[in-house]
Length: 455
Image (cartoon, rainbow, N blue to C red):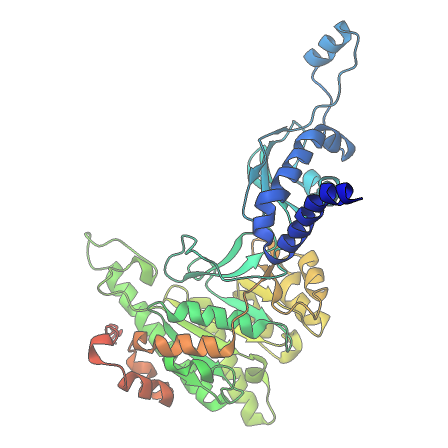
């Protein structure tokens, strides 16, 4: 008996250590045990799995003739593949499709491939005509998400916000997707996504503007880094007027820059202007957009119509002027009133967390892909932070943002308060706490003054 214990004890201890490692450090477990096992399984069963999933094609005439000469029958031919290459969350196989095959054939068989190879998920991505990439995910990467450890090659107005279900990071690039709609019910993780966004922008030379008609309860903790904050509908209306005036002045600057002479390159947006005259970008965060649509009297209706019209103008024209919108809300539907659908159409990016009604998910994602709206309605309540991200190209994926507490986010905004650019048109809306924080910063640490756009 003692000999049996001594023989099997190391095996049991190794198995127990691997189980603990799989739960606590899934990345390390994948590199030590997961990748070798899955890669070997793929290499051994590749041909049989492709044949069982209907992803093979008949052999060529030459191969069939050769097989007949040898008294055999030519087997179906699977797509040519590369060696399984490891990644941080799984492995990648690059395929060269045979004649007559399409990426949709592999997408339809992704679930069968997942079960055949014993992985958490299989994602198909076309890379070029005739070639695609199979990305096998070793475990549920959205179970626990940590902030990105490296910059991921991002530039100005571009920052990684959430981890995708295929193991890559969802990067929010304002210059590619200028405006975005963020929806999510209470405790869905929408606020955490917004905190990551604001903290990422707070470290960059960007004007941050907040509109929070819930008396500023959501955006007030970030006031030290905000250049303007409107906490009531009346102040929001006035702030939108100031933003429209800034946008018009920037368009006049672009027109002057484009006609400055033959030595000046023509441009239709602020990014084509020289660095010494280019105005600083502005990101406008609207929290709980439904508050801007609500009206209790005729006067409120007039103000509501005026604010919605101004938001639509900013969404239509703001990109060229370097003004970008982040519109957030618990729900969003056409029943909010006139202009809701038109505003939604201008918001290219869509982020939908768990919502309380199907119409909000359809409003956010149904025009992109019906299956994306269905995926958003199936997000479980015990997974806060999980969302479906899509854009006007029709692509969508599940993501989850790393958890960030309100205290940590507010501390980042306090530490970066010296980076607040000066924009004279927004001075009347500067939060009082932001002015006090700026006054306490030593002169040597003060941010360089942004060049305002003159009339």
